[in-house]
Image (cartoon, rainbow, N blue to C red; front, top):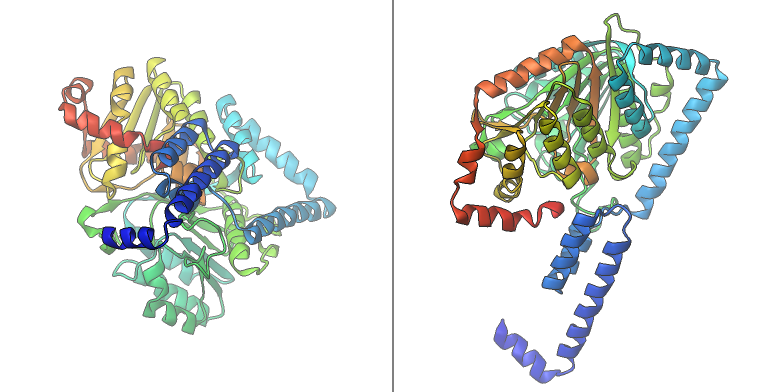
Length: 499
């Protein structure tokens, strides 16, 4: 390589100064764009500027490929169309005389919440526009086998439609039952739509199983297609990370399970993958439907708004829940602000589980502050994850957290992939989002806040089972780690704002 470059420079001596000038121009332009990007936080901006200066050619290329959460012009127009369509749906409800009734119901639900819960609910409503709804029956599944059997049963009872979106789908011994149920439903005339992320489900989208599904009448669509020609979304690493199922508008699933067995064959050396998903029967499933309808429209231009304009299913159970969808089109820091509010409003205990923990300074400060004001603050993370780089970056924050009194537990029963929060045993969050920048600022995520003591207690019980298979890290133990490990983690930690 070096002899070739030497020959080029000797033959065309003007190449070297041109490359140097281009490198400087790229670096200056990139720094300017970093500094004017309104969504780029100061910590992240500093890290990008340092990378661009340290690696003049590589830094700008990395930034424009992975650093800026930009949307293609077509995608931006599609998001504006979605916003306009939502406004039109609300206008039609007002014209039909349901607006006043909805407001009365909303105020009645809010009045049933505690003061802290009302603050969370109003904040969450600014993200997706949906207020909490009562009348939901909520079950929690932590075993993939049981989850997909129940999902298969619900699909077999579907009469109108089945809508599914997943980041990763694998055709294995556990998920195959769901695919067969979709085929059966489509053959009896039920509208079945399957939306899979173009990167996470790339092998499946090229598999025979996709062909069989489409042959049976299931519409299979690739979300955020990858490739230079097919990509319409902008950055290749902005992904649809949601895990959603909606059946007949009245039954929904939301959580962290991908459509795959816990052995997770693409990364089975980390198995079992330990997840959690909530099944909802009730009106909040209609709000979950809205997220699917938006995602489907953005990929297909097919409008399904009539499905969410219908009056929501009236459930008989008392649980109050609220859906929110986040991503690069929502307002800046929507998801991390929700997490911060849950932590800051906790008075007795806050428990968080996440596979990938790379917090920003506000999240880190919130956890330390909660612990110092006497709130039992528990963070449960897997002892081993599928990204060594992320794990080292995560460990950079441990000493500060431990010194402030935060309990850090490492789960040793597999790769803990569940993303849950329970505050004071009364309010809980089930989400597809990790506690890292990618989920907070880049990926399309789906979450549900539950304002119910019984459901939150069951989720807290599940977190308790995680603790029985976890080992607590002590502050003194962590302090005595070898100096080279601290140096390694701190060096990698400099990249934390970029991970």
